[in-house]
Image 1 (tube, rainbow, N blue to C red):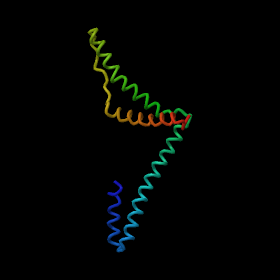
Image 2 (image 1 turned 30 degrees about the vertical axis):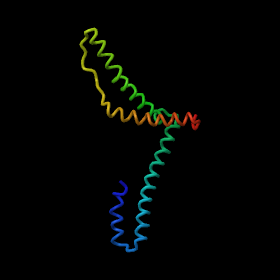
Image 3 (image 1 turned 90 degrees about the vertical axis):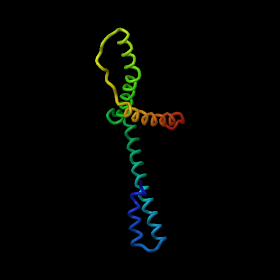
Image 4 (image 1 turned 60 degrees about the vertical axis):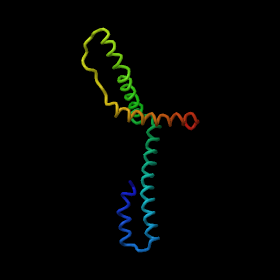
Length: 131
């Protein structure tokens, strides 16, 4: 993606700079400058994430557990609650309205992302890197 953004600029270098070595050096500087900018943004976000995780304020550090519990409850409802409810209502012949269904594709995207982060946290704990 970065190459597609930088290509028009390097095309301009061809028009204005004749020295091939200087063009190559400038093109390389442009590419590394954009990559460094992206890396700086990612590192800044990591610092924000660390500060949020260390906070004792429920509204700052509590949103991740809230999302985790929400995903867990929705998943339990989808895979356990609905089938068990339908089984017992069918068994006893009870008519009930249609049960709510969740968009499991979106839910799984969020849940798997969080579990990946949770796996890294577990790795940190096992290695003794955090309390």
